[in-house]
Length: 265
Length: 349
Image 1: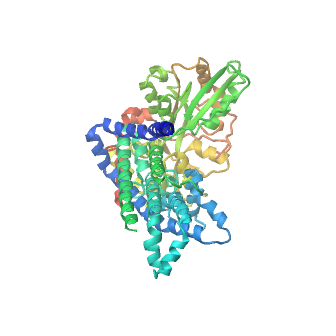
Image 2 (image 1 turned 90 degrees about the horizontal axis):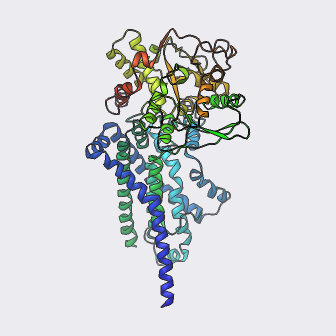
């Protein structure tokens, strides 16, 4: 009896700390954003987010982030697979390099991308001031998410299960689809959601390369900054709220998807 | 490597929130740099990024004077609008130095700066410059006038007047020179449309625009004379052309109401010949024509005649009225003349 009480108290304190922490860092600031947006009234909110320039920026940002997420799901899983299952020279180095987009300040990433893929590209690839610049910058900063999510799950996967599947006559494709995939799908979707959310909010790494051209390469973060510069905080918050809602929707969607797929296994 | 293991959902929410917040709130770096000896007074200078070098040099001179003896400085530099909003939100400041006077007016409205801040002879202006064209080495496209900018095939890089207050000087210059040349408002608007149609990149700040230009983008960089000179001094320069008609840039400085009394002496020193001399040496045009800066400024097109007189010099006061009027007319988020020109350029392709 006394043991149960101690446990309860400990977990109660833990929960309390977690909730306070979460509230201070996430709930309160986010509520403040939504609250500021609401302060401008529905009319301003609607006018801001349906304004053609802002709407175009939101479409571009969400579209590119979604595209990048799809690419990351495939490439990230592949890289994680290679890192876990294959042994090759330089693997330790690759392990470290994967995390560089995490470690690099985004504006430094922007400089690097400009130097490599700008007008004076030593590789002969010039994407400066084009939509592909936005795609490239998103791709760069979101690379580690899926890899780092899938990698540990894949490492824990028991190889004997695969062998058992094979010995029961399953083809490699079937084994992957019916045995491996269901166990790594939660990790993939979690990585995908992180990657999407990160992409949607990206600013630093693309400002130099994308040129911020309205209707072409201008992302939502730039619209938000424009509103702030015009002392239109409610407008800035309105645009931010739209991003918030879209990101939440994508996360929920991915969660539902994940439950379906892994439930089938 | 095991950063993400068991609790993806929690991390996910955290990551999302952090990402969004990073967008919403652009942090302001607070760097402390001190000059002088062991002092009792510390002045907080909050400014836009460009005059950092000049202010540092002026501070060094100030501490050599009887008034400035023992004064130390805490400084913070960043984008003008961000800095102004930071002070409004409580960033400690004794003296502010911004790119545009609307950023000081924000502090007047917030009750932090006295309404009489621009009543002096200098009208609140502490440093000046002019809008110039940065060009590629040797000026291969032979760009000398505003009309050359709107020729087909000329690629322009300018900081974004939407998100950078300082970039508004450029857009105003482009508009104002048409009026100054006898054009109508319709012709000026038409010029702006053609101008922005040639813009290939709209970076967020003057610094980003320079970086982008030096990285190979565009034929012309809309720049300020002082930045061009300072860039040349640090070996990261570009050629520049001063057009016959251009806009005088006037950067305001002000002391806050509850500032240390020393701040006023600092401002007086900044405005004095000794202070203005340091501005001149880092590329700014002094606020009075008779300031002696020794005759040469390294990094200028002609170091022995660094600030040639502009035949047709526009000013905000003479040609545009005031910042509060022109902000609404030109830069309103929906109906500003410049805003509309930028929108039109985006839809053209």
